[in-house]
Every structure is written in structure tokens, then in C-alpha cells.
Image (cartoon, rainbow, N blue to C red; front, side, top):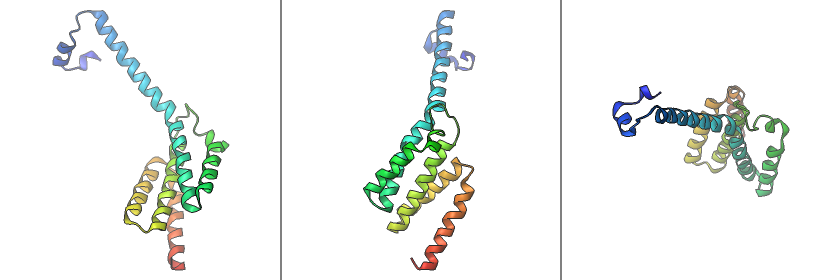
Length: 155
């Protein structure tokens, strides 16, 4: 690992003994291990916590604050979601369900407000969902169908 470091950096570190070189290698490996642990283990719980916030905002947008609290509580205790978002579950479902709810929230917010900014945010949310989840095909068919219903009903 130290062989790949540039010569000026090695001179700046002033490694004089093999013990110092070994300490630097062990420290670098420990840092990589800690970062890998944080990414692999804590990604799903981080997105699960954020999913409850998005579920609250989604419920509040559709109905009111009470509905938002119920939606957040239900997603927080849903066994199917808990099993996909526990610490150490290094799969994409924890991130994908967050992206799905975020896309729905941004889409409904854009439809309700009619704002171009919210529409752009919904488009970016949609892109994020497509990038994060392989099951996006189902949603690709659902949202245009909803837009067609809105057009037919004149909304």
C-alpha cells in the first residue's frame, strides 16, 4: 500500500522504521474496515429511518398530519419492511422502498401544487428510484396510467 503513495508524501510522513510503516498499514486497513462496516451495515437502517419521515410527509400531503403519523407508524412496524432494513442487511430493498415512497410523495406534491419545481423534483426522484431499484418497471407503468386518468377526468 505504501508503495503506491507518491514519494513527496512518503518523505512528509518521515517513516524511519518498519514499525511506523506497519502502524500506517494497520491504520489504513482499520479505516477501510470501519468505512465498509458503516456502509454495509448502516445503510439500510439509515434509509429506513428516512422512509418513516417520507411516509409522514406523504400521508400529510394526501390527508393531514394525523394520517402522516399513522403512515409513519405503519411503515415503522411493518414486518416486511423491518426484515429488509435491519442493520447488516446489505441489499437494495431498504434503499428502494425509500426511493419508491419519495417518488410517490414528490409526484403527488407536484400534481397538487402544479409547480414546475416540484415536477422537476419528482422527475429527479423518479430517476433516483430507477437507479436504485430493479422493480421500477411496475412503477413506470403505474404513474403514466395515473396521469392518463387525470387527463381523462380533466384534472
